Image (cartoon, rainbow, N blue to C red; front, side):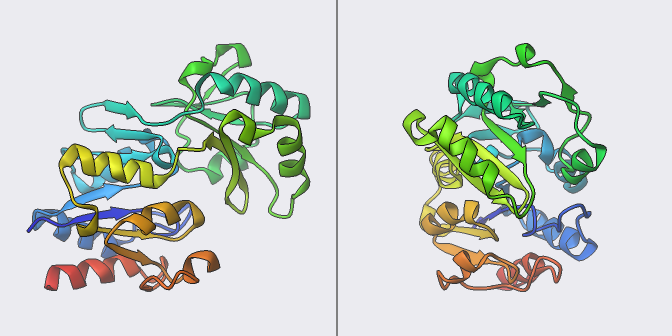
Length: 265
């Protein structure tokens, strides 16, 4: 029976700013060689999968990008937009410009930024590969999937000011931290669960038979709907409180351990 394993990337499969560890790479190769399906589910946009897909020589397969906003098949260049900020991004960008907040705008296949940013911030986001630095007027609001901002780990004032000025819920949007240093605006329907359901429908998969691994709050919706949810030991306390089976940490390559176990079944 073909098994489907859905993996969050950052701090689940790969530590931030690091390469895929050799043991994990070997485990993923064995998983694919055994004829099983591997799906990446990430908050990043689809181009961020390119290196992993090339490394693993994955010639086909759909993946979940932009936190469930997009289904992508990088090998063919096909994309399906599931949920996006779209025209509402104009209002978001107006407010952020007024507040002086630098932001990234994701489209289906690129990331554009509204002003030059420190190289240290660009380096922090390894998925920003030669991003297009464009003027505000160069961004097509309708094409925007989501928006992303850097904020200080202790900064509670910026989210408060932005929420007060933007009123995201009234626009059908959600404002949330996706990591300690990143703030995101996306469609309220834009979750990894939406991506997983769309993938299951497309490939005629049963949710109860899917395996998934995550570490943070944006993985929760995905873990709630699959039959076999797992978290890594470095997962947020919110996920740990759900009582899902816990693997070794990302640094200790818990995903590789799970693959070894599933292949042995």
